[in-house]
Length: 141
View 1 (cartoon, rainbow, N blue to C red):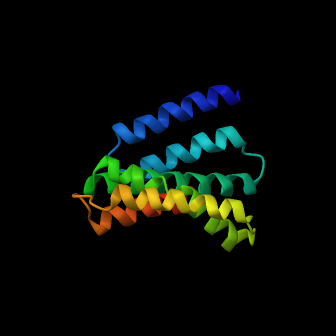
View 2: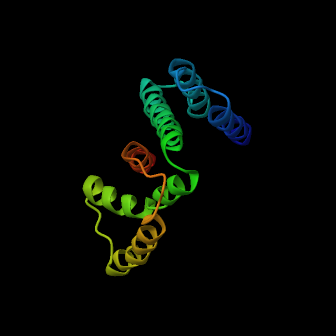
View 3: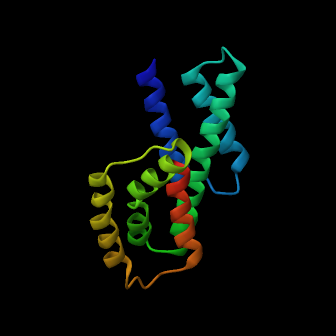
């Protein structure tokens, strides 16, 4: 059952990125909600609220990724999205009050230096595309 739902979820995600225009928010939101609720179950109202939250976050990830790709190059979007470890450490500290060790924090320095070097001379930089790519990192957490 779980493998079947995973397969359909993958097919659905690919179809969102390729075929569904951004103006059809309601269709995407309802379909994702139904797929998530089928995998979790309809037993409690709590599980439905989780489905709504997860499907809304999934929609925002797709929407912000496509918005970023509209304004900046694919390489720049992927470079910005590869700063995910920094957002994971930062948000886990803010939300969970989790403190990471010195080695984890030191390992973020070469990642950030590499990202700065890769994006220093980006020709297709716009603030909207950059903020949309950063927003994708925040929502994916």
